Amino acid sequence: MTSADPLVLGIESSCDETGVALVRGNTLLADVTASSMDEHVRYGGIIPEIASRAHLEVMVPTIDAALDAAEVTLADVDAIAVTAGPGLVGSLTIGASAAKALALALGKPLYGVNHVIGHACVDQLVHGDFPERVMALVVSGGHSSLLLVNDIARDVRQLGQTLDDAAGEAFDKVGRLLGLPYPGGPHIDALARDGNPHAIRFPRGLTAPKYAETHAYDFSFSGLKTAVARYVETERDAGRDLNLPDIAASFAEAVVDVLTAKTLAACQRNNIDTLVIGGGFSANSQLRDKAAARCAEAGIALRIPPIRYCTDNGAMIAALGSAVVRAGVAPSSLTFGVDSAMPLNVISV
Ligand code: KG4
Ligand code: ZN
Image (cartoon, rainbow, N blue to C red; front, side, top):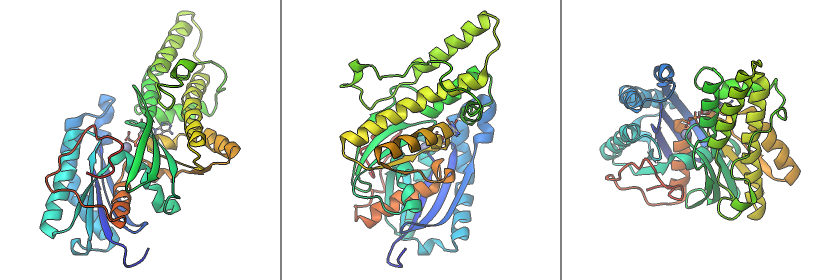
């Protein structure tokens, strides 16, 4: 951090987390998160209207808490960054409205930035600025995206994405199928650690040779989910006890095998020697283990931030805001609209 670096306030509200953080350069000064997840658990999924109301209630207290924790005032803030998309439109609107009001009242520049790119950029707070070109795999309950990052502030290209469920979403759906609590991801992870990943051969989506041209870097997990459902049904019909650890381990293996194989192929074909993994699903131990093993084998440096940076938070948005401000990118207009389906080559609006 240098004192010349701008102090950036970041606001995240794309889903169920209200996150506010302050960053100077790549130094995180405060990161405060309020989550409405407890209110969604009984529905087994995020209810957008409940999430929006929760953002509205906690937005101002969360901003105040972050300023207090960083021991700064609003007058010290040099720029404001906020998630412009993708995400739930009502939730995004609460964060964007708060950020616009602050920018207008303080006369400070506003940057509407991309949530998914933030998941990659947050790693700069932990491991420093990215080298010139990196590959980023962003995996969570809402996204599974493979990004070629030529310049995190100016040039990001999407190489692939999921065509149906995100990786975490697939885990959550299989968790429900196996009777595990919501969200099922961490429960499957725990079960899988005691199972045999090669016990059941589940399908690897979009890996057949016919997809090599059209979907080389895309993912699909819905067929896998159906295969698990069919397997469970067959076992039950036959009166056999389910071996949950083996099912969990074999399912997890199918997901992380495809994620890492396609990601490593993309690194090699694009001559990229650094891989960044971000998003809530990067907490998954099967993914961490397989990515570490395959990167070591291929001579690729692997950067995964600690788990607290991988889930949705304000730090990722402040980090991307800081990168964009330092690169001299023009601020967003105060009239920008949030975009629930913001394209992944748009870093800031
Ligand atoms: O990034 P995140 O907190 O929220 C979204 O933007 O989606 O990611 C949450 C997702 C959920 O689907 C959750 O089940 C999954 O990440 N997840 C995991 C693990 N920890 C979180 N999935 C598998 N194994 C884990 N250890
Ligand atoms: Zn996210």
